[in-house]
Image (cartoon, rainbow, N blue to C red; front, side):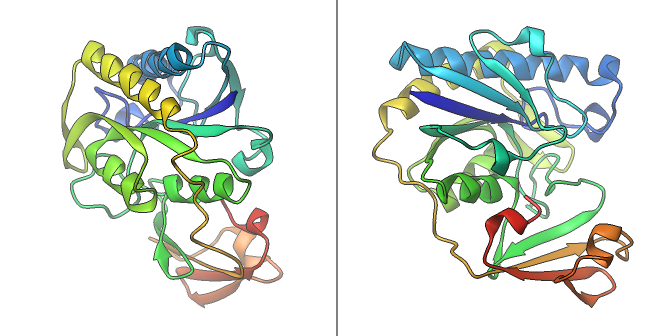
Length: 258
């Protein structure tokens, strides 16, 4: 079978400060990137311990880059630069998340945000608050791809179970604040991820694709500052609710900014 792993940097063990993630300087974020690669490799090893012929692609989902491609073992690196998750979701049997954080506004969730940690106050879809996990789970679900696994902080794991009750999760740290967490060691985080990913693969067929949110879609985004992004200001169908809130109505999930 063919698997897609979506990664982010904020949920990896040992990462709990924005200085480690917002920078483009690989010297600063490098230790976190190395740890994320170890966790991805553990996830891949878990997948292949259950499905020895598995093909695994890995999307680097961190905005400034969260992985060194050469650190990955037995998987294929995919950059999001110039493309989108929705465009890449073709012919996969399951999706997994590694290094995931919780959505913006989640209490005591380390490094919580929704797509932009500097700009976005919240995203809401059909009245439901939604973060990166829920958005991408929906993109996959509408194509019939189940999300079977997530690793990251405890608040991200709880969010995943809220959307997909049967999902298998592996917790790398306990969130105690926006930039405060108690972490597993690198070795223990990887051990647990490998075991949980193996279990998740065994559950394929018992975890349904996430399709609870259906078109027509009413998408709403609220920002911390007045909207100046030309994407929204010139969008032919988006409507400004106030200077910091925009709404978009569409029946096409590809038009949503996920």
